[in-house]
Amino acid sequence: MLEQICPIMPSRDFDVTEAFYARLGFQTWYKEHGQYLLMNRDKVEVHFFHHPSHDPARCDHGAYLRPSDVDEISKEIEGLNLHSANAFPRFTPAEDKPWGMREATLFDPDGNLIRIGQEIT
Image 1 (cartoon, rainbow, N blue to C red):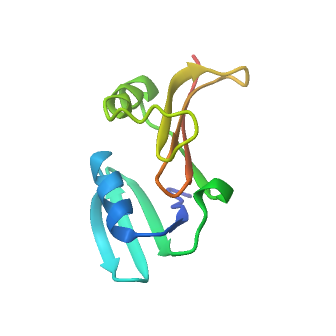
Image 2: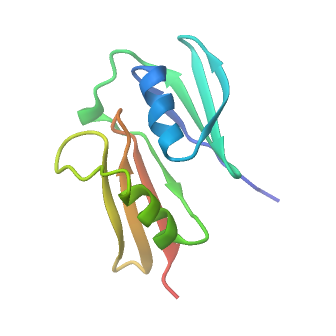
């Protein structure tokens, strides 16, 4: 019965957020200046609310993305060269986790955490 859930995350600057997610293959669906941004890729939607004073280092927002092939999306994101120990954005490629998932982690420019995972078969 349930088909989709969409995260609603903070953005300090819609132009920066929009450009970052466009690099990930997302397209803008709706943008209300200073209020709301909605982007999608395939059947995935991400929503953003404007929060200019948001601190990425203290962000507690995120989402869990379940692609059909975590390694394929991991390689795609790796090509964006987001490898940084403490800065935003940053990315950690897919690896097997002890809880039975193969996961990658992506932090966007506002510190929103996107875990990207697939069950290990």
